[in-house]
Image 1 (cartoon, helix red, strand yellow):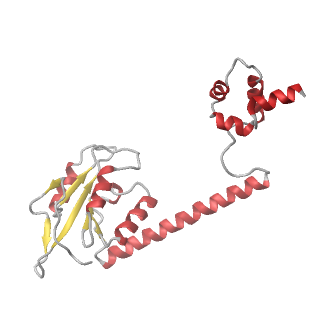
Image 2 (cartoon, rainbow, N blue to C red; image 1 turned 45 degrees about the vertical axis):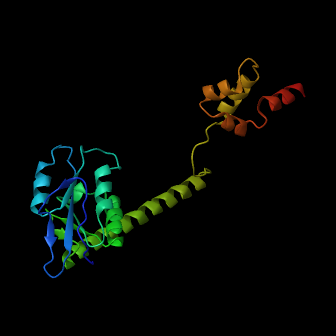
Image 3 (cartoon, one colour; image 1 turned 180 degrees about the vertical axis):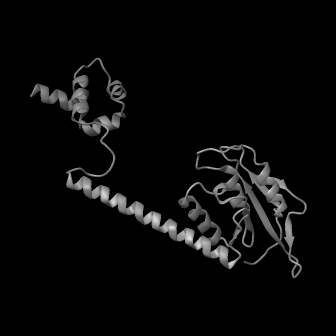
Length: 221
């Protein structure tokens, strides 16, 4: 990875946060990321470790949560450039699943950004660390293959039982019959019928082509 000049990032910045390469006029930037756990909503331990590791910038999530979207992680990733290293305290602070981990690793690798995990002594800049992360990628690929196999198996079983895959229809035979009965009452608007059925008017017309007019023709014929 080719180092490049240190950039300024607005967040928690440390004056001593970069490692100077004595053989060039460039800085190698370490960007830290911390996320509190459900058991401990404080990031103090992580922050101290990242500071001691020489992180130029530390992005800290405000609280731990189940949501996939983590704004500070997104900001940390966006701040890194080729030659930088993303540093985390533990691997589970970076990702909640193997899939998330593999996706993040792929993004870092594509942009030539390193990853260092302090407590597990993993570093993509070392041969050992690179091997470990390649194993994670293999496990992630295996997990994707298993999910595909389960999906195909489920579709095969459904087909054997005479069912098709996909979403359940918004209106079944019983709902269509009820909607037709309501449409025969001219005092009730189509929009009101759709609202009571819990669907959009367009869905109602899709299941009852022609709507009230077609029902009137059938009744008159």
